[in-house]
Amino acid sequence: MSLAGVLAAEGVVRLEERPADLEAARGAVREALDRSLDQLAALRAREGEALARDLGERLDRVEAWAAGVERLAPESVEHHRERLQERVQELARGIPLDPSRLAQEVALFADRIDVAEEITRLRSHLAQTRRLMTGSEPAGRKMEFLVQEMHREVNTIGSKSQSAAIAAMVVSLKAEIERMREQVQNVE
Image 1 (tube, rainbow, N blue to C red):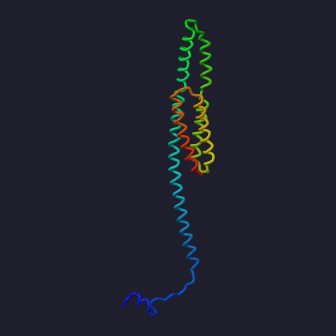
Image 2: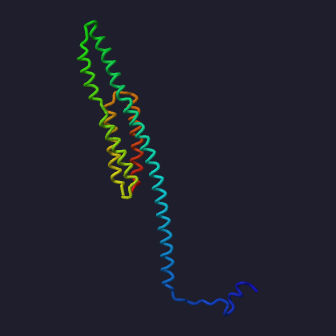
Image 3: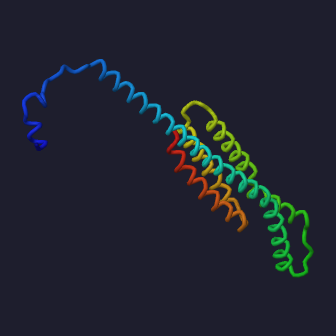
């Protein structure tokens, strides 16, 4: 006997409609929804932890480069003083130099290229970003603003700099801050 023959025999297969058990369906839907929400929360937590690690590493790099700029800035003033003195001596051709006038010019230059304020503000923005990262409140918009301010400070440092080494660090800083800006857009 074939399967079709068995299924065609009377009483073997019976079709009947049963009323739907809405309570059982509600319970199944609630359970599935609860599981899905738990998995979503766990996934978001893992993603947040990875994002925080990445941003933390980027903040560390920006801090290291800012320290490098701070360390190199005084050398730029000294280098300018030496160049200015050599140039003035070359142009003066034996005429005695006024050391106080040279010192005055170097002081004016030092004031013009001083990046201490920008470094201080950059460090403040970095610290504020770290605090926001450890907080429990949504911080995405605040972090976007801080990254924008970091970029502004680095641009100012770059425009004031007379040093090739500092200029190279500024390029690295800008690139890293741009990567931070992209990551911060994923922060709630």
